[in-house]
Length: 189
Image (cartoon, rainbow, N blue to C red; front, side, top):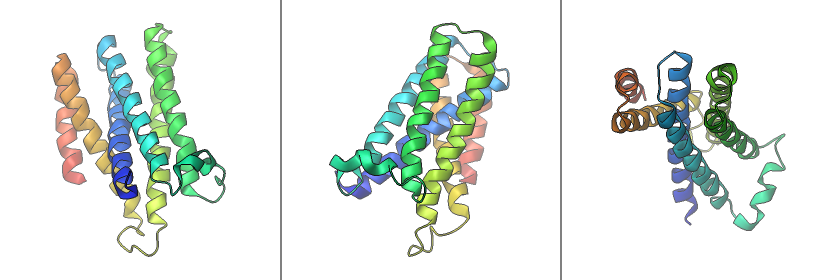
């Protein structure tokens, strides 16, 4: 796979998945009444998109057969940190899905896991953005607003995806909140 194409796949797919999870987490924390089947299916879609993003992340390395070594330089490399945080985010999304599936009591499924998802999504955007912000030879990216750009584009695409999924699932209350937010985020991005 062309390294540039895999970077685009990673940032687009993983960013949209992060945005989708953030939209779901904010809706749950905000008290919107989401159907458990819709929430569970949306989390599965997000987890699958994140796995695709992780695969693309490994494919853009110079030698994919050495991808397992990508996490070894976590003290000095933002890419290594990203490769560690992304599976952690996938784990949080899967745990949240499992908590819904197994009908775990409300504090865990409706408070702790959505909060964890928000925190790890923010950390993942930070790691991803810092990879590009540290590239001093590309002046457009070596800028403090690179982080804002990654977060806003991920949120915008994720909220659009959430609005579309909510519309298909008949989650009208969710769509009424997420739809205008998706437009605002897209304009901000």
